[in-house]
Length: 387
Image (tube, rainbow, N blue to C red; front, side, top):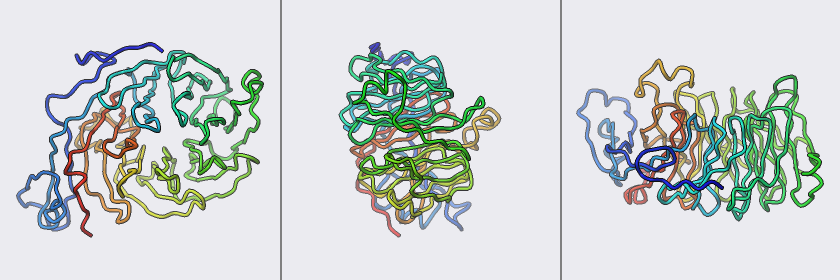
């Protein structure tokens, strides 16, 4: 693995700390509050009592985010390993970066892809890394050395990929393009012949609508896939049959992320909503509504909080100011479906968000090519939602 340590000078591969703290939590302007004098407070237990009396437009916290600069193109996905000490980032450039999450120092890069990298995943004990790219390949890497262990060639771009719970089976989905249909392929890493012959033990065709996001379900018995049409399917990892099919979204599902205990998952969609589902039955539980397409959503491991990232369509970014584009990360209460805070910073839509496994920070990757690591202030952990 190519080691490039962050110099702190703001150059490529470095972590920088912005001069002005862009960490700003904006509460909703409630009905009947227009025109009142804004009150600026620290995040505290009284924030919602204040919000009920006046329009609290901004709550500023002192903690500055860590800015990661290691990509030349838009971020496509960010992902923590299980322990949370490493953060993997991929973008529409061929580079796969891995960073220390505690200080934003770049540990190294995985070089080999020749096109945009759409997805990344690390196994349970962070021995292996899996990436899927628009160069029609899925690659397996040794996490520590950066050595490429396997190259699985496909007929079209690899959109999603992931390790199962034990790290022995990988799955990835390919795009429906260039006359080829969408497939989900399963490889058992314990069988070298499957890798050498590029022959998966199971291949599921998806004729109707291509898969745009997919994750492994509980205990690795199935995968949960979100489609371009807004459908959710649960595929058996043994037989390949569709176990459950639901359609709660009206447009493309951009992202699926599981809860810490894998009993629930949250989806992000172009229909301006994120929704909470039961992992086993795919029963719809909650809906979080915004005014812009939602590109990514993540569940806090410690609190009943959901963070949403999105913004207007990327093609319209240059025609609008950052204020109108609504490029903030938005925090919702899981049970009450109420928005209680926003974090500004990105100069374009947020494409991927992720909570740290310990719940003390979160990261976001945007269309601007930057990854921002936000550590929560102590007041965040004392905050109580008042219904």
